[in-house]
Image (cartoon, rainbow, N blue to C red):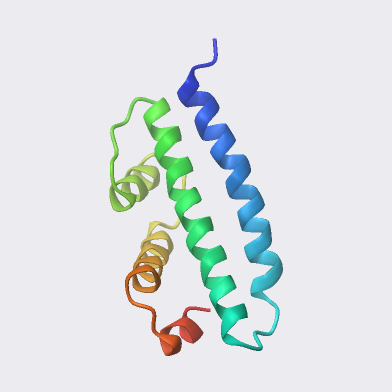
Length: 111
């Protein structure tokens, strides 16, 4: 029998896939203005949020208790769900920088 948690991580994964495809599609385009830059940043933030929440939902479905993005990433790495925990932690740092303190120069670098 399929649990509601099992369904939730699968639904969130579908949303993640759509978001990731948009990020991938537009991240290689040249950015002409501030609005385009803001759009790419939003795609990144949305994709990252969905990615760690998919991991969280999946881990909880497997019986783990995780609360924060950092804790989720660490457990996903320890469980073998992700290969490069360091890259995930860097993405978390970039997401936090962009979400809490918009800096145009940092936005250019995060790309």
